[in-house]
Image (tube, rainbow, N blue to C red; front, side, top):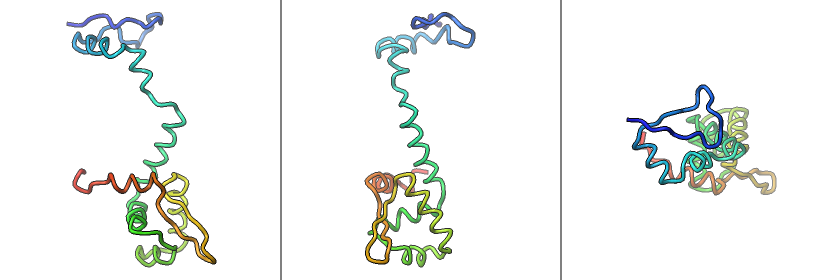
Length: 132
């Protein structure tokens, strides 16, 4: 059985759900209704930031970099040695991780030292290889 969902002050338009299952309607009404549910959608800028983090995590090489940096801050030469990749390729991936806010760098004399940000650290801590 279905019940009217209500239109939340909007005129009925084609494509808007006119009926929903009774169980859903009851639990939704108890929780605060459709306006409450819609208010749970994050603002666009927050979603955009999350998308950037997910894009940065979508490459195995960048995940390797994060795991190396979870051990301690490292210079490019150590990362390059462990990963066995060219400077330009490493630089590209470090840039993506930095842009996503997962790593940061600091100058120490002639060296750039990379480390995880708080966000980067929490991403590595939450990652569970057995969860996939």
